[in-house]
Image (tube, rainbow, N blue to C red; front, side):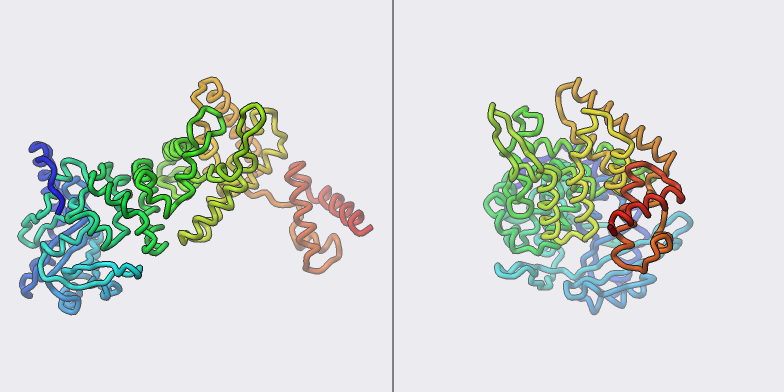
Length: 497
């Protein structure tokens, strides 16, 4: 086990204990009741992991992780009697879950969800992506297999005895992530813990212990044994955390990103579009932070945390390394990097097993993120504004935020000019939307009317005519049915000649 750091400040520890007492008291009625049932049956039960850590941080949880000396077969009837519903989907890993519905302890209470796992140890076969699970026989042994000391604390129930064999409370006060056992052994047992280290840096705002960081640097390639789905889930949690930049920097600085998101560290070698000799990697992190600041509350246009916006902000420039060209006179260009980047983003997100809609949305935002930059150079026609809105579709509000965030220039005049130009564009969109219902732009004739006017049956010609009328609608605004019929017949006559 690695050496424990110096003792934390006593006042900080005392504050953590006060927070924990308040949080544990809030969850006590349900957890203590369950603990009483297990003890009466002759088994140990303890709160463990995230709920204990969060209790010390003053963040009560209604989803409780517990560990027990009982086997799954022994735990299941106890949970069935305690809860209003229970399930055994995790039985293979020693876990039985249960839910107690709200209202047991008066108005305003919430459902309580518990997952109870038998004491265990596990390890990874070097050639397998699945952990080998073996049940253990002590709480301390179970805690030793946890990822970090701040997650290796427990509270026995029902007597609320605090168990902390690896000084997790001290590390919590020091705000440091340290492994309970030698980090190389811990990360070798489950390489995903290296990703979890970056995720907890992003979630908790803690720093990574020097030994743990060095181990990740040495073992980064070991992450390749972990399934893409598990990596994706950790990356998603990292990006949705309060401090994603800090977590991403851990991924890049330790070399983990070279294996899970190689397009990100590749950006460190590039120069940004403003030619200020700052690399595109730092620019992308700045864009991410600015985009997060523009997310809205739950009733706003882009409620945060928004995964699609954050992914697009992070990946919007990944096409630059492949498109970089050194021009005569010393300049650098990245022509069509938005198109190349969109394809690269889609390929990477598919490899990480993101869902189809997320892949499509992030790729589309990446493709569109430069569209605005011609606006400040000359007045767009109403047709160009309509196309901007139509091409963005339901991603328009995210595109607004991505485009605004992409301005990271230190030139105050240029920044003010870009902001004013985008303010102007949004004002024009609002004006046109009010006049023309931009969000629901359709041709002036629908498919049935097109077939009636042209005397044709359903088929490819109807779709082509529909697209032609839509193009006319975008170019000229509402035509009205009579004018649309005239335009359609003229197009059809010319097409048929």
